[in-house]
Image 1 (tube, rainbow, N blue to C red):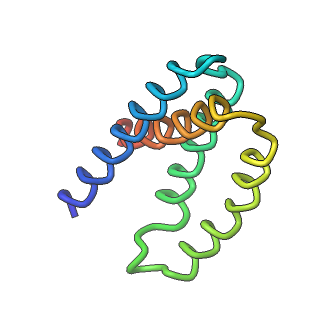
Image 2 (cartoon, one colour):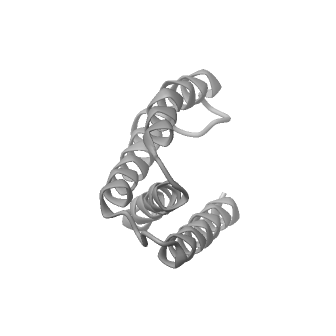
Image 3 (cartoon, helix red, strand yellow):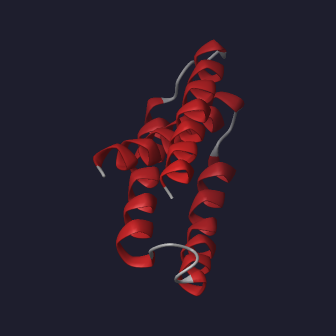
Amino acid sequence: MGRLRTLSRIIDGATAVWNLAVAARSERGLVSSYFLIGLGAGFLYRGLQRRYVGRIRDHPGRYALLTVSWWPIGAALVWTADDEATLQSFAAGLSLGSLLYAGTQ
């Protein structure tokens, strides 16, 4: 289980760095409001997942319910984004929020 968690943290970190770099190179730069929304959403999602859902092997129904219930929230935020910088800022915040929660564990 330790290797899988490490791999998940590496992926979260790499996607956060990648999305931050892409957003920073765009015309608008990093869109702080979407970055902060993504940061909060990523942190909250991981918190709910670890506290109430547990591992996917132990509770696949709960895991699927959490994932399906968060899809409309993410979709609504993505649909309101008007350019690539906004999307990249949200994605960077989401990845970094997930990584920050993992760092507190």
